[in-house]
Image (cartoon, rainbow, N blue to C red):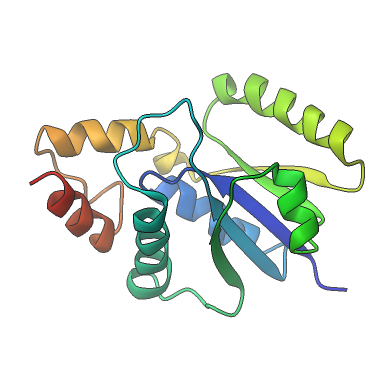
Length: 164
């Protein structure tokens, strides 16, 4: 039976930190579903459709990752329901700092209560990418800063187009 995982997030935009987590996930699963959503408590730069395009451009065009192992989707349901839809037995969550852990730990506990068969796996990005957040990327872009250390070429291009 193939090991399938869901990596949910807003990815507004996708960063090298997210990409680290995706690459590490692919070492432990056969198929990774990268799922983006609109959470009501965030201020988005990109629509869900634009984020799907950003994910595809960054992962498949810029980084040349294998499309056979990664599926990109949008969702508007509980993550555990999305897991059932794709026969996923794991939820992948990225951690940047200790401050992320409390929220992620509570979320993992709630998901476990909702469905005992699904495990949450926490992965950290590489040290040089731990400080990156989508919020900071948007702020740097707004102030015309250099994004090359934080996001892929396609993301830089699309952010610049969006902020014109």
